[in-house]
Length: 324
Image 1 (tube, one colour):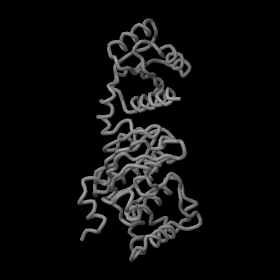
Image 2: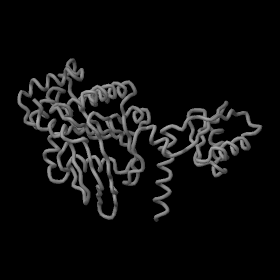
Image 3: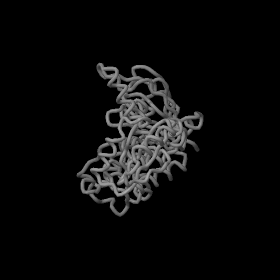
């Protein structure tokens, strides 16, 4: 039999559907007219620089903060009038590890189960331990865990009450690559079960693993869609300069190309330089003229998410500075 929470989701096209959310703290407009939709079973990546409004936006969506204006639903519940129901129905993982260092993994999970007033909580805890591979470490103190195991404990706690939506605020920050890979495999397993995931991240490889993405800067949503849609919408062209390029030469090349006709930005990738612009023919002409006689190979390459997000961040920063 479906739970009340699952019934609400089944009756709605979206797990999250918010429109025109605004939030100010004093004279700072932290979230500016935010509209987003996340479908059931979708992994939705939320990207943006530090201080862009990602965390505040997530808290508005799950009822932890009340918007100054706007409306919407989360798991079918009104984000203003039914915040208690939302808090009971979602799993929220904060940026910082927020469990008790002097309790074991099992004791931490048992405490969370008691907070949610879960029936048969011991059975739920054991299932959670088994499901996320924590059984062998169940009696280990949380304070002695590595970053990857702390992350797994936090996810187990989020999933204890069987939420249909996970809100994850930079969950893999400071975690090693192997643990990050395992974590994302778990997220895709959960999404295949119909669980929606809204996850903020700074990692481009993680962004590319999301079904949909949104990019926010200075509280304003600048782009939304699949990775392919976001890249295509910016209409950028990228060329790569390769060769035996030392770090100091990369800096010199970047400075040499800055402000040249057709050049919007240059970004170093290892020992190569990616040069991006909007006018493909003009950019190619500039590169051929500038690189003539230099021992470097110049070739066209696909514009990636990283070039796009650097471009969005730069243009947003310039727009903010122009307002001052």
